[in-house]
Image (cartoon, rainbow over all chains, first blue to last red; front, top):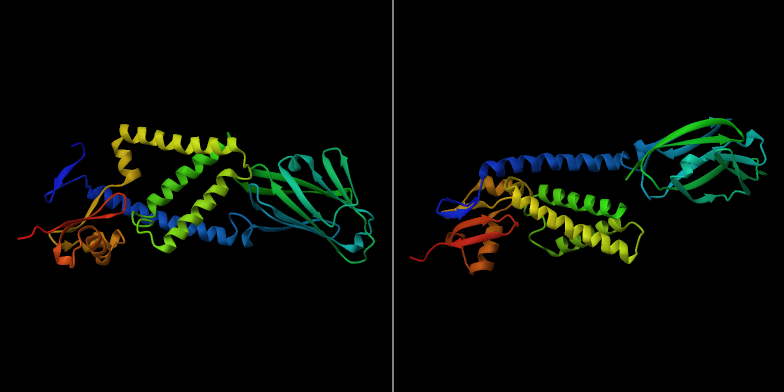
Length: 167
Length: 149
């Protein structure tokens, strides 16, 4: 009869003080669940409004990316390079340390050539355009935690960006 | 190792989320609840296996889930206080033919649910024929009918 008491003529292991605590925990948990969903909608748990970052990478160029990433989930990294930069080819170099933990799934447009220079993978894009260039990398994180990506555009202007990858 | 951690993380997350969502959340299976349960199971499966469809990964995950369940049952046996938190306790929601409104409201149960259980279990026609109703830890409602005079 361990734990079973006779309450109102019923042999039952009811414990109303425990139940009241559980109801309180349930209500607090519902609030936490609502906050979790609000955070997800706002972009704190992946792509979304508060996750979006724009960083200048020199020569009137910029990179647009999401700070919050999810493990194994593909996200975009957009490079906007000004036509006036005058380089041909245009090069984007990404640090090897970052690419060890993230896989490039696709690049649009495809680079005309790639090179390995020091600790960087360098992607060269033939540039015969007079318009601004938009280069899109699709990246899939292969590890979680804080990641740092170093970017070098056209061989100069080294910039570092950070991303947080959720498991 | 990755599969074991994934399996355990999902197991304990589901345990907590179903516990705090209340006893009645998925007890009374309607067609929509069944669809919801299937969606949850599909989402869970994708989160657990990632992209590894190998047999060995499946075996590791099944062993992890069953092992976690056995481990938890041992812990609950040794620690009855923890068992209360994990499994919950039954709650009397109607006594001497009178529904306890506060308990009903907090448990998200109403008289229609009691009457549904009364009809199913004992073929009762009215609420007046119910003596006791207990919300069990499984989320089901047990009915004790009044003794016939």
